[in-house]
Amino acid sequence: MTKVLLIIPAYNEEGSILKTCMTVKKCDSSLDFVVINDGSKDKTEEICIKNNLPHINLIHNLGIGGAVQTGYKYAYENNYDIAIQFDGDGQHDVTYVPKIIEPILKGETNMVIGSRFVDKNSSEFKSSGARRMGIRLISFFIKLVTKKKVYDTTSGFRAVDKSLIEYFARNYPVEYPEPVSTTQILKEGFSITEVPVSMNEREEGVSSIRAWKSVYYMINVILSILVVGIGGRK
Image: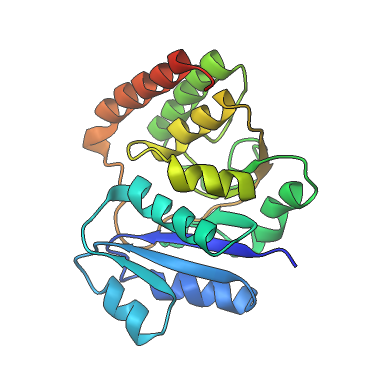
């Protein structure tokens, strides 16, 4: 039987983490998940303990890249076949899990990205206009260095196979993890498929990418992608 793990990074998600985990349990009680509490300063850890939610508590805030890599290390050490990144803020819809793992189960790809943009009608929530413009720009540079078009470059709803669990457990970018890791694995010769999904707007908390950081974020993401592109395949 295929072992599937949901990796749920959480930083100050006291308002949504319980609802997210209960929704996962209600949808599929057999689905394993682990909350990576990334040094939250609110009651996220307390909620995990009180409700007996499987979790790993990081003493210091490592950022989204470090938190997700912790989840991949856990998946690797516990011999999971598929790992899925799944936001703790309620944006991702667990009912899409069968759809997002299907291409991996069929042996068609190494990674599947749940995409808001590969099918224009799949998701009503697509983030702000400025954010979408940034995503298109990142997509352009990823294609420039990898020759592969990726539509939803910042989607955190991603499933990977066993080979990428091992790869990410050892190599995962701390900064700008989604677009940079996507570029890395394409340069390494792994394959990526996008499937249309619907996403929800965040109900609680604040996105890690703030508006005042957007220009800084874009410049550094593009530079990071170009550096990976120059480095080439190992």
